[in-house]
Amino acid sequence: MLSIKNLHARIGEKEILRGINLEIKAGEVHAIMGPNGSGKSTLASVLAGREDYEVTEGSVEFQGKDLLDLAPEERAAEGVFLAFQYPVEIPGVSTTNFMKSAVNEIRKYRGEEPLDAVQFLKMFKEKMAYVNIDQSLLSRSLNEGFSGGEKKRNEIFQMAVLDPKLAILDETDSGLDIDALRIVAEGVNKLKSPTNATIVVTHYQRLLDYIVPDFVHVLYKGRIVKSGTKELALELEEKGYDWIISALVD
Ligand code: ADP
Ligand code: MG
Ligand code: MG
Image (cartoon, rainbow, N blue to C red; front, side, top):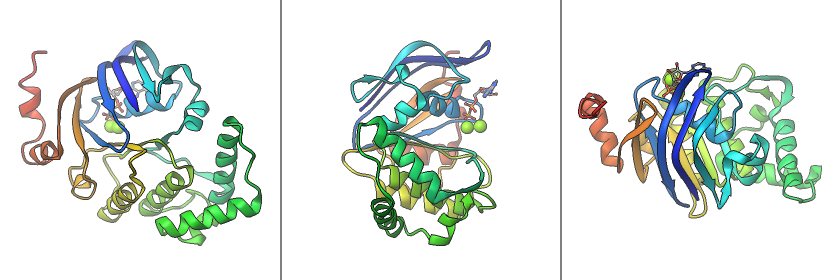
């Protein structure tokens, strides 16, 4: 599904990704861990197509297409979803309206008819029941005054509605309590299917107590320096990152 080869990217003069190689197949969940500042969020942003980053080398193929060649909204329409580390607040726009525009944008790009109000509401209600989100949260302005847990629930709900092929969740290092972690984990587990894949970026080994990743990768100074299965996450919890870093040549 996703094939990243020798990916280099920079912001301004600073090279942040320095040769990422990663293969992800449909049905897989990959966790990306690593010390603060190693480039995890940069990788997520480059995949989603945020504009501050310049890709200087390498390739990213997504379902046979050159992902780097597509605009961010085209990537979304192809099925790439990035849950934001710091979700935007949009005063005056309810989640319902925001999601309706997002869904119909994507349908338009795919050459499908927009959903009318009745069709949209039907789908919306099914997804609400599926991820167990409360109606009151969806009629409020998007993310405005939401608690950490509510933002996460909303994020998972957006994921359910958009039904992405590749979901990228970037979990910030602070402010996530155990309930919020559980919400994310339950959502990811529930939405997992043989035809989609998930990348979970996290500092927290604890998150991986609930999400069982198929693969765990350690990112350090813009490279994947170690990959393993879920046992690697347990080892990191116990021993930290130093044993991996000190074994590196540079
Ligand atoms: P992580 O998510 O692993 O903590 P980031 O991808 O956020 O790491 O950051 C990687 C490096 O890029 C850090 O050294 C950070 O300071 C730098 N960086 C991130 N965003 C910017 C930016 N907008 N301008 C300059 N440097 C940045
Ligand atoms: Mg960071
Ligand atoms: Mg980060």
